[in-house]
Image (cartoon, rainbow, N blue to C red):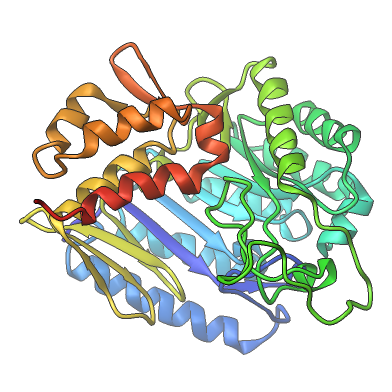
Amino acid sequence: MKYESLYLHIPFCKKRCAYCDFTTEAVAQDDPVMDEYLAQLISEIRQATKKGELAQIRTIYLGGGTPTHLGHKRLVELAYLLSLNIKLEQVEEYTIEANPESLTEAIVNDLFALGVNRLSLGVQSFVDSELKTLGRIHDADRAKKAVADARGRFTNISLDLMCGIPGQTADSWQYSLEQALLQSPEHLSIYPLQLEEGTELAQRAGVSGTAGDKGTGRLSSSKDDKRPVPLSPPSNPVPAVPDDVLADFMEQAAMFLENNGFQRYEVASYAKPGYESKHNTVYWSGIPYLGIGTGAASMSNLGDGTRLRSKAGEEPEILTAKEACAENLFLAMRMARGVTEEQLNRASSLLPEIQEVFKELQLLGLVEHRKGRFCPTTKGWLLGNELYARIWDTAHIKSA
């Protein structure tokens, strides 16, 4: 199998954030566990090269965790190894995630020299009190310094911002948005805070459950009760932000950024024209990708229309041809461009009910038809779980 995109997972951070439920752990920078992990990662990259799996890679993404927490020496070693195993001249986008506290000018210079052409910085907020609530270990000034250091070499910089932080107001959210634009990024990812079960922040907010699909702003709780479920009284409580306020924050961001030259091309992503993330778009386009490292996911399309999904440490999953078709449609609806009439017509051969479902979605105000395409509305993005579930369910409707 040859893949077009490669994701490498670095499961280490200096400190675990209060909201984090990702596959990562806090370790000291001199901990030998990082050397052991890097050696295993390098071994898996070499194995993938021998299998021919990296011959057509056109996007690379190092995520985490915090890749820059590996430190200068380890990160350069990894980037150098990738330069020997992948034809970088055919790679269109090569991104590394970084946190402000661990990005240095030396790392910036050497990563750029080794072919990296995009940095994604986890800023989250430009308000110090909000960063403290999130358990971040940088402040706003350090974030600005990191962007300035990155700008010394990179012309494609993305910033992550988070809304719905306990204590955040419309004014403080506006301040973070304005400060972000003052850093002149090419790309912004806007995420509503998810209170994920088992995290410190969820416990402090006294709720249980997850926020559903990333980027939808929906909060789901236990199976038996639609309301947030209180845990034992937290020692340092914070107020949970209601769903309608999250939706307002997302709309506030959309209006502000679009009025300032950014286009919303995906449910949680905004870019200046030409700077849409190619790697992120792969995930919503049914293009095969390879994940290497703890918790990394891979996807490949099989010859009979079925699809293989796998994740390190878990049993692989085979999607039927119907499921793969439905998945293509609902993933495409995360993108502003949606799906074409032709795509929907082709899908009808496997999913006879899909045309009717899209008519229902239009009546519900989740989808709109314009210029030969079916596109998600703002309401459709905010109620993403409902939109995606209705499309996915067409794969399991039994014929009469």
